[in-house]
Length: 136
Image (cartoon, rainbow, N blue to C red; front, side, top):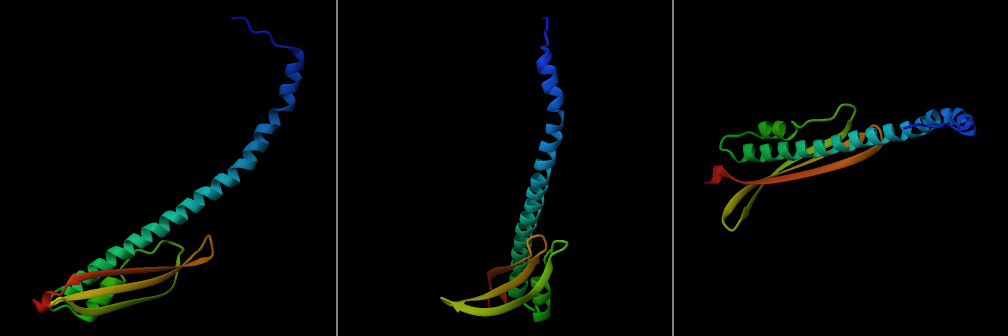
């Protein structure tokens, strides 16, 4: 197939060569910002899941016969913290409750993080309950 180039189009293409670079320079910072924001959001979600898992492990350990408070506290605070996140405090509370004749152990963990990119503080709360095997 034969292609014919018109002379006035050739001149216009030379003027538009720099527009691709300008468009790229405008779009890249937005894409990088969105990518960094996604990384921060994923880190927050993974941190919440890790805290929940640690709380469940601490509740299970607290329900076992012969477990000590220091073991439960250590298990409750052994969660993954993302790099760059700074802790602004945590607390772990173990409580024994009785419901319908059954004894339960409940562990509540609260953790506060400061997110570096956003400069915001986030409070995570997690609770887990298990049947107290020491009362069985």
